[in-house]
Length: 161
Picture: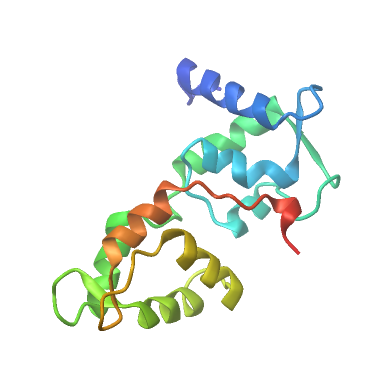
């Protein structure tokens, strides 16, 4: 691809090969989101679905030549939040102006804004990423976001119920 540098294509190829579980030069489309995230792309489930990702294994296969334009599009996409934007948005809830907010408010924000998550998914995110609450129920939201953005994302698509 003309818009990707040679080293980016090679990084894509190396990551693609990890997800090519059959060795046939194709990945199951159910792994498209995790593959893009492994390549440091911040993509939503909706954008993965629009790019050809699937929710169930075995529905569709993607070869490397089909993947490169998807990666390129994800790289160029402006439809994702950056950590700085999210930090700025959470300052609204920082009543003490000290980098903290109520953990319950953060859970409410996660449940009600952006991609729809259920209570269990929010609990899982908090378990994996949330710093300990202080005695008044406040957490450092920057620590939470940095941990969240760092990943990894341990649940594989086939493990979802």
